[in-house]
Image (tube, rainbow, N blue to C red; front, side):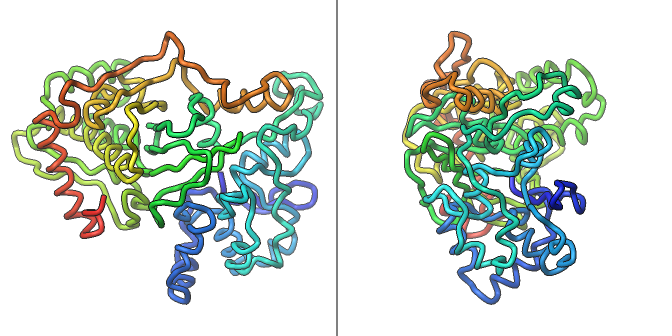
Length: 422
């Protein structure tokens, strides 16, 4: 999602694309904040999201300042998925999940003229594509592309949605009040609602979903990235082994909850964190490390740290339900899923299947072509779903209670007084 693919009138890229992870707009954003202290809060009040540096509007503002000659030649600025649709169909457009986070308006499920003006982009508004429903038809497959990828020419192509929206849709949990977590490279925990939710303010993200739903989410920017780092750095001998996850399971089995007093903060991102508080300077670290700790303890601490972060995110959301739907690469590990259930004190349901973003995209295509009447009812509990009940004491089990207290002490040292509210 977001970022900027800058195209000329023929659809040819005018420069290398800029993705959402890009940080070149930091100085521009800092200057806006210096001139207008409530700048970020004004954005949040419209989009419901803490704006990332690589969002489309700040990137366009950076281009207008540093590469105005390029924008003068441009006809379109789109995101990657919308550029891909253009390559398939020759049509330019975007969807509501994208428009609302440019930043745009979550309530209007669209772009926002106020946000465009806030960034001084009125002269470039015409570069932004038309906004359509995700489940609408977005064109038909070009013959040359169809031949290249092995599908039939003229195949209907849906407008589609951003990756987070498609993944949440693919889990089948669009009923308001349902909590869903994506434990992938990043770790996102959120709650479905039938209205845009802006509380608590100035923290987290709000995704506009198809079917008049919203996903109020808190994000720990690094999820399974922490485990990848642990394999590559702490256990390079295991990193490329096919049985590395079996070895990981044996390490978890050999180390008690709490990892013998070792704590890990999973803030392994150069952009810091945007929940439970916003802190671009937050960084990952071990706390309490002593000679007795081996790499098995460090691996357990890493996985527990991510689970503790998820508990933090649920607390920020004030979630009162008893079930958390969990998808993503991390959900494939039964021991990690069970650990999360114990730490958050709720039943964890891992839906059957993989690639839930692709599933959500397929449902949008089915709706666009008239094969699916109700997206909300598309997902159903399957007999193959894996269910992990928390232990009888749940998150209050003595070992996890002690470990969670140590985690929150380390978090307070890292993030300062603001962390005490989370």
